[in-house]
Image (cartoon, rainbow, N blue to C red; front, side, top):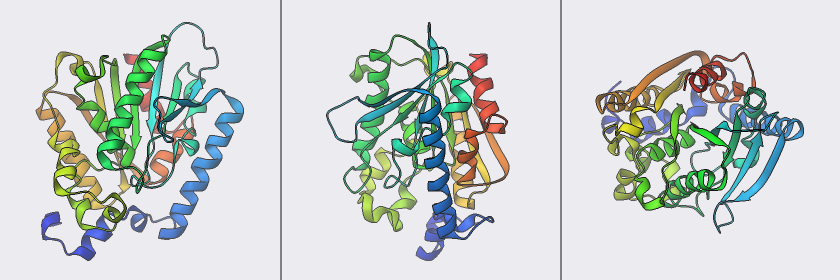
Length: 293
């Protein structure tokens, strides 16, 4: 694999089209199956869990959260904040509760974050919304005993941007103890050159300002206690896999506690869909991360 800068437009499109790399299904079918899986999983979660749905964390239409509470919501408990993918322009919090049953049964709250997707939302706004949703949560709910981030694809990018937040301007510092970044994009510059940017309309300046790779700060004492897991699928594209490796290395060089998990036998989509299963390795890794804190 050459550098992405040396790739033709066609090669870049291919590298940054996750649906072309699944061995299970063709590109349209794998996306359709993904939407069906997360939708059905979320409907099951809502039916089986105590929920607070559509909680506003701001004034905007998209600025709402869904909270899935533990089976026994007494005392304090950790919260996993899930940030959905969809290339910043599809999906929503309304199909993002599928991981809740496996976690609420273990005493962990799950929060699915809504944000304004493109073309309505732009990149600076999405990053700010996700940061504000966190500030709102820790100010609003006294039961939180530790915050864990989990993002998939574009959501992994947004979760990674949360790690570089200067919380001074939010008047609160969330106790972020862990982050699980799944099949993410951490350098937005290649995105400028493909179809994805048609809806996002990012300039180079916006892409650079919102690239986690370029925002890695040295691990301050609080961040030193935050464990980061960068997960990538065997059947993610070489570019997605490269981005995951390089972001992991950048965090490590800056003093973060970080590990790379390369998951065999999954693609860009079922790597996250399977979080609905208790026995799935990523579910187990998240539960272990939380139990160790």
